[in-house]
Image (tube, rainbow, N blue to C red; front, side):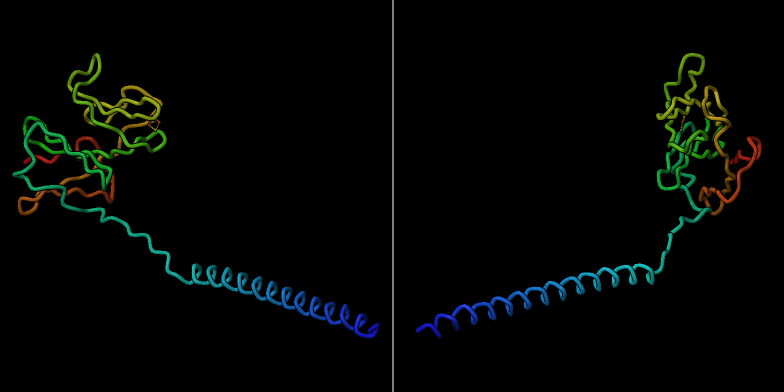
Amino acid sequence: MEKNKKKGPQKDSGKESLSRRKFFVSAGNAAIGIAALGSLGVTLDFLSPKVLLELPRRFVVGMLANMQPNSVTFDAEHRLIVFRDKQGYFYALSAVCTHLGCIVEWKETGIPGHPEGVIACPCHGSIFNKTGDVIRGPAPHSLDRFKMYLEDEKIIVDMTETVSEEEMILKV
Ligand code: FES
């Protein structure tokens, strides 16, 4: 009887040690698996191509027939404002504020002293006139101006380079 009593606890201790070993082996395998998955993710991220899809810098902004005189077209995709004045002439201004890069907005109602309309930046209050010059800072300089073309009744803007106020006008 005494022998059985001694063997009982010894068997339990062996089982306990076995299950503890199993637990640590499983935990170790799980940790290795997690580490392997993590490093696989990092490797795949490293190997995947980092492609930045850039918009074309010269593009059709609209059809001549659809852009009426005395109209303003905002192109959110290219961050651009295209004006067609009362005479029917076109010009295009960047909608990116020259202060810290916020997107400016056309305000048709204008402000006192500029009833013809202004371009306003919602971030820090810069105001530009209709042709992009700074009326009120903190913007340090005028909005970028771009060259425009008429090709096959299509109005094209070329944002590859900025031009002067005189050069930006497209007379049609
Ligand atoms: S970003 Fe336009 S005023 Fe600051």
